Length: 130
Image 1 (spheres, one colour):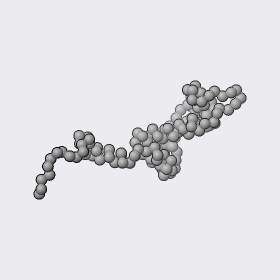
Image 2: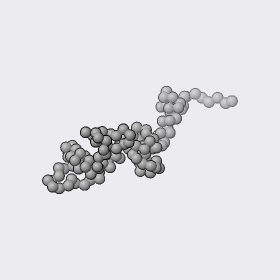
Image 3: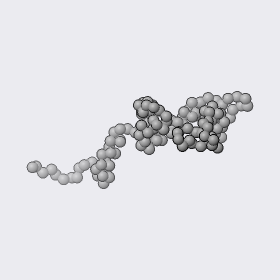
Image 4: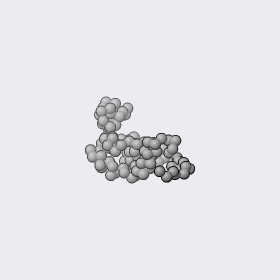
């Protein structure tokens, strides 16, 4: 049985002992990809076809992109991924972050209320000289 260790972010056996990444890839991850039809079955005695785009790294990248899309901050994401430097996480995943202009626009729209968010600001009134 596999569990996610409560004290850290790594997969472990029920006994609490960590899984070897080679074991995980060979006996759990790759067979799952074969079952899903993502990669071909391996020939007896042969290794699975190497493919970085279908490896655990791709799953890790997907995990980060889902969290960023949901609005998770870089510092928290760095912690979840085991990065000691949030700057590294930012440099690695910045291309996945939503456009800052869109975020700024939404923030201002939210601050002024949803009712006027779609208006162009012209209420049709004629300006009066003071």
